[in-house]
Length: 325
Image 1: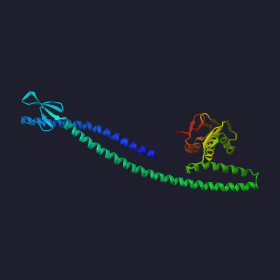
Image 2: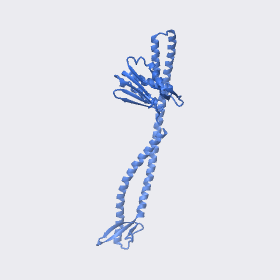
Image 3: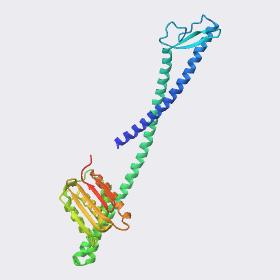
Image 4: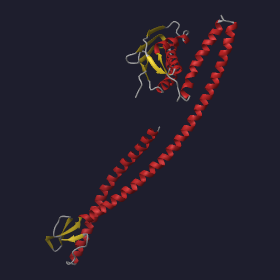
């Protein structure tokens, strides 16, 4: 966040400097024209004074007919009574440079104050805006945590009640279906908890991706009925939080199975550290696959893993378990 703010203020300063530099260039060119006009008027004024008083030799900055031309800006004027004779009026280069340097110093000083003031005001506005966003984000995070926590307690209570009922009616198929539905609901909502919780002390371990892919199908048996499942699985160790890995695979594989027409293909490539999940997209699939993939992508980014999607004849998700730098 600090680096992002630095680049934000740096980019603003750079834009101001470039913008003011362009303005300075235009001002400088216009000033050159104005300065040339002033020099001509100053030289002509001394020339007219010389015509009225031939003893006039100029002053400390302007010299009439200087002995040497080096160090002077020379302007030539014709005498009215003698066109063949010209009067040279020299203006000292030091005088010209002093005026130019003084102007540039004043211009740079005021521009520095302008840039500093604008960046400071911009920083105050941005910091205030960021503070409001952070407060809003924390409020939303707290709200999400509270809702998910209450929902988790609700589901945990019902799982206990289902376990008690199963002891009394162990062969009841309705109870088994309710239990599976409850477990799937917990999986669906657990990803929200994973995204909003404080994970600074998140415990990670090394797990075999193949085993967890196979484990995910236990909760997707009903959705996978009458669909062709192709598995090209090889063992591949992944360092991640166990619950997060379960959520990621359940959401991605669940999306692929639910929204497929007839085929799901899952492949693990240990050499490239890729998990590839592909399916033939069924009708209405596009309206139900975006949210889960987006949430899963955010969860993967916490571990610096990457998720990309390609939609051609098939809907294919590539999960790279190679940490990005």
